[in-house]
Image (cartoon, rainbow over all chains, first blue to last red):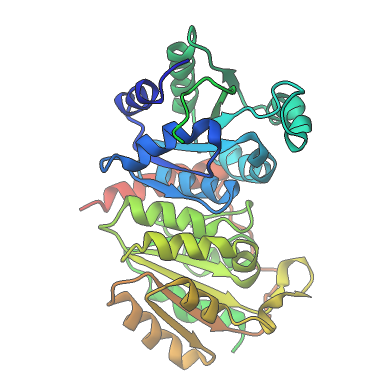
Length: 165
Length: 189
């Protein structure tokens, strides 16, 4: 397990300075650290596609944005990714929890848990599943892709970050 | 008032403000009246002009940011009105050209004939909300709101009137991003 504190500090040190999203319990520790830090604005979004729009505006105005969400929000985001980010070359770092990674999760997560990587691949959006071994390298890859104007997703499995509730 | 008349009134009032345009005829009307580097033309991602505008406004509090939105877009993303009210950027003016239709897809009716969008914005918590129905009111309403701390909401009720021969935005999406970022960087105080 990586502590949410370590990862949030890594994000801040890399220049990420704008945060929004829709909560997931798997990301609760990370969100509460970011939201509690007065130096880093966190804007609660009502739905994941609105968070994509918010991040796009922040990037256009000079920020380096992060969208935190559960994979259940991926479907809402697909039109925004395909008709905004990908064609305008507007990057965003998506930190997406992976509910339904195995079939023991709640029923509403099973199908998206199975198809979320395929959806990203179909859209031509690169991602990494982060682990204790690769999280720094994955974030560096994400930053390289963002410098090319591309969105990048870090998928986070259950229990990877300590939760904040 | 016809929709085109509303654009002819409002667009010439823009000086150095950032302007985020919703998709459909809104981009095309504005582009053909006055193309500006500070204009972001959102050609897809319906519903997101308001969240893009909010992201810009909170990131650039030194700069007035105007969202030029449509009724269909606002109805699609009504929750974003709550996000704007909660973030409460003083520098944001949300203008909605309300023709009560999805005009660019064949004038199908929208719900804004029955739902008062300015009342929704007011209830969400916008600081100022105004509704105008006559083109002679537009300039005064805009100037009043631009002089006040927002977030402000200006609903302009119009009749559908778009001329289909009005050209599309001819910049590519990538060019729009590049030019917009360069223009708003330049105006940074």
